[in-house]
Image (cartoon, rainbow, N blue to C red):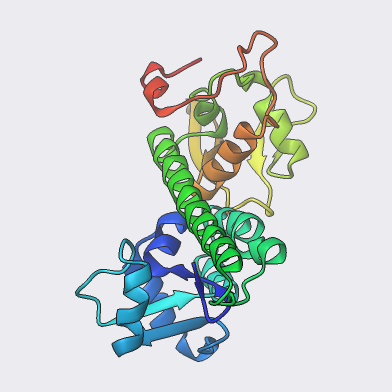
Amino acid sequence: MTYRNQRVVTTDSLAAGYGTTPVRIQQNFARNEQRFVEGKHFFKITGDELKSFRLSFSDVVNKHTTSLILWTERGASRHAKMLETELAWDFFEQLEDHYFNLREVHGVMLPNMSDPITLARAWADAMEAKQQAEALTHQQAEYIEHLESLFTDGLSPVQFCKRLNGVNTSKISAWLVSANWLYDDNPEGRSAQWRVRSYARDKYLTEKSSKVSPNSAVSFTTYQPVLLRDGAIWLYKNYLKGKLPMKVTWNGKFTHDKELAGGDN
């Protein structure tokens, strides 16, 4: 979708891809309106201009809409920054690579209306860009649906990864050490005492502490890393990229929502 020679997205499409609601996008805009410049970060369409725009994009513009905001690449980036979630940045990167930058290949110059060949090419380019944006939004919606089915509050990274087909969960904690998420607080002991590093704390992981008293004279505190939603997104994204430690017997298939009821893999 292009407007005034710029590739743009609607609030609804942005919200669906960012894993939030249109109301949240609107609220963030209202609270930070001074940081947005019309014509640079967004366009607001009303009146006859909106009626004309609706003729070309009736499937994304409700007939009762009296004003419409279209976000440019810079505007979409601002919203990703305000949400500051792994999911929002992931979707913005997809838009950046596969939607906004299509102009570098196809261009967005208005066609010569007297040249039917140029006009046909421009129409085809517009349809391709529109389909690409719709496909990205649909793909992100499926991604969010799969993730929501997988993630439950209170899971440790290992418990979460047990829901992912083929992951070698015995190696996950050590792998997260290399990702700067965990460290062993008992390196000389027989078993590891995993603690959360400051890099990942309150962003990807938190900790659950428990006091253990084997007898009245002895007590100590144990800690368990607990996965946060952004941590689950990061792990799931790396799982789909094939970057987690996998079992030698893995069949090459990734977990989908229909498989989740099985629990451990």
